[in-house]
Image (cartoon, rainbow, N blue to C red; front, side, top):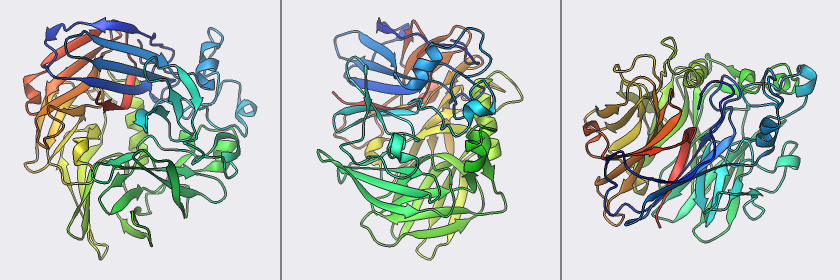
Length: 471
């Protein structure tokens, strides 16, 4: 599969055999992933959602299945005329071919390509500007939009047609068995909608927070007491977008003279706090926790949204030496008086940060991610990495030129024991061959290389996020 415009990954259903090592004994469960299966513009995120499921069953071959989410964008892409110069439908990073009138007053098409999660027994493909799309867990067939039992029922000028958005980054608290999430509703009165679902119960819309501007909010973090949102000074220019002149991403405006606002929302209710600090932008958090009265959180920080756009473009041109990711892992601490302390945890470029999900809302030492090292200059995220936040050290394995590594997820050896014994599972894409390897690492010794490599006969696309589901 070519990551440049026009490449398509084919759907696959196959049994896998290791080309190196062996599948670890006792590894049982399903890894669900979602990402761009095709690429319709120079932004790697402009691709139709391709959800894959890799199932590990002790004593049986590993099985992989992938299916596109059947959104209107997918249908339009499939039916596009050969040789058409540009996307057949308006996307986040590019307008539809045909000029301004074809894009006038049109919202970007839903591509359902950012993440996939099992929520209360439903498998949902997530994309932050729409409701989830429900899939059948076994076949991955598309069942349609899901309003989470009316919690996302249409509201507001942009909700009448689509319903309320539900972000691609829900946060799970294992201590309280609660899933929290948010959605940004833009329009004349932009708001941040906050949702909570207790295990086995319905999703509830808990509160709506009025935003002073149309901030781009992609992710959030959660401690035992607070939700943490970082409102970097990048906003959406709705008139410019709806005019049809520019795409949604081109209508994002960076206001470098303004601060980043850290929004702290108590989970128990009550007034929220806003703390201002130096301007920066981030896509993703790694984790967060309470340290006494202080709130601590880790994230991948970019200098500005302009640099963020360059990083997105670099993923579509991964072998261009002039393109390289520039996010770094930082830690922030906010005290009750609103004083912010921050420092960079490591200098290696990093994205897709994750932690052991059992440590969500509690202190964590290890952060896992995809990194860019000096071993492969100009290659975006060719290495699997473990970052030790206490020692400031990185343990990496670099696949080198012509490879892209996706978000690594931690799977414990024994889910009942809270230790660092476990595996990291990730996708490694071979760009020239157009294939994907599913790679399994010992989480304690990434530099030793994978303990198992499972080649897939087709590409699974460049995936962004996913979830490990125990059997």
